[in-house]
Image 1 (cartoon, rainbow, N blue to C red):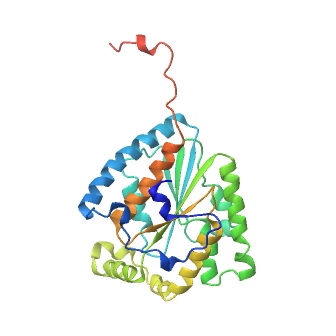
Image 2: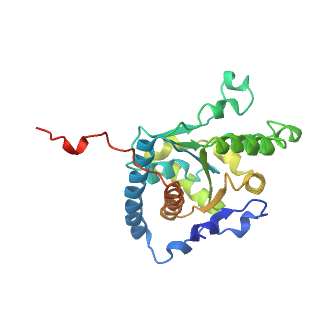
Image 3: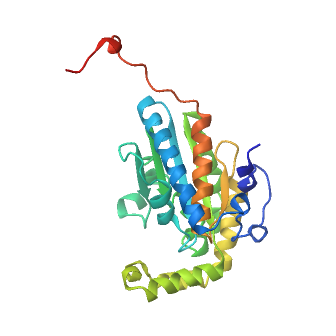
Length: 271
């Protein structure tokens, strides 16, 4: 068993988020911030190689789901973990407020269109899980509607994995105090003012309700085929190291191979 499995929510396991330390750094406990950043550069190179291999082989499909409370670090994770990868084989799909066309369909319609094709890694920045988070907490959908969606989502992800997609889901776990500091930083630093949304303060008042919704999401939708990982995310460098490690271990387990070279290539000399 990998050490990283300490962050994996096992199928059928009942977890409580209060039992997960947002400041944990136990797998790299001897690292300071700068050492963590240096280690990430090594992992970036390894991930770049594996992603190029995956793209060249053209057989595997990988879906990475990122969910977090406001300021949880989804954008930063994407920027740092995937630095240097070939953009031809990696795509980010952000899910914001649904359009009128999307609202005219079932809630998974816009999601399915963004799933990865062979040879591609797709990163969901927010995802289909908004339908059991925001819609639940803000009473956009009644309980009789959103409560059915846990099964819908598990069935949808089972379809994807049965058809050859590897799914990794990461919940970026920060504390309420850390969120406060990050929101204040967006106000204090002019270059980050654009990221501040006054609506985030209203969501912050619903912290406990969101934590309960995230907890149910993790307990009800972490499966063997599409597991959730609870990532301690107060320390950004540690968050990046853990997520990179999970992705790299998963890609290695796929036993990918470069396609064979064209016949006669050994006899070719470039003049």
